[in-house]
Amino acid sequence: MCESLPDPSLLINTIVLQESKDTSAIENIVTTQDELYKAALYLSQQKLLKQPVLYLSSYVVKYKTEYYQLLKGVTENGNWNDWVMFMLTAVTETAQLTTRTIRAMLILREEMDAVMKEILGTSFNYDLLKLLFTMPYLKIELLERTQLAHRQTAASWLKKLAAGNILSPQKMGRSTISAYMPEYQ
Image 1 (tube, rainbow, N blue to C red):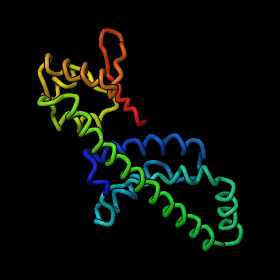
Image 2 (cartoon, rainbow, N blue to C red):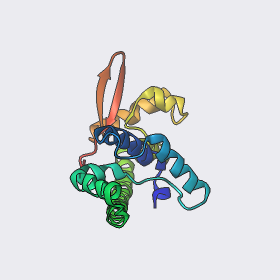
Image 3 (cartoon, helix red, strand yellow):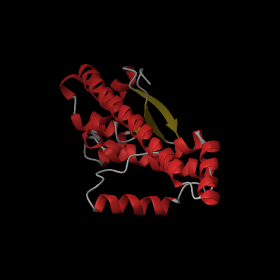
Image 4 (cartoon, rainbow, N blue to C red):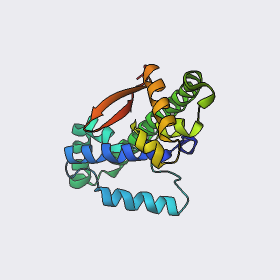
């Protein structure tokens, strides 16, 4: 399902950021990012996992007390069964949440496709839509650098999308960035 996103790395990159935040919040409970990366890489190489898209630390943080109790049970009594069941539940619930997130992103992409076609008319460019789902903001220089548009066309697109409440222009030093701010967020 993740492959159907315009850029699956967007979801994966946010997961890495969330994992980093939550891993530091629960300190040594969860394996380190390096170990998670190695495990995901191994699963990918064995063709058992196409994209590593589960964010398990969130579940562990949410049920931290239970996790600590189960981990203590493993350490003191060798009770792996309850801990494994906890982790299987974590994987199941996280997979369901991730699936809902991906579906919501695909629906939003379809909605944005229609809205952007209406706003931009004949100048609509599907690659612009894909870029919008890859980057948290757009700016004229980025559209030029990716060879999506010349400066004048890029400026026109960003202006129209801001007028349509898709982007929110914000001055950052000498540049103006246009953050993605759909009404439905």
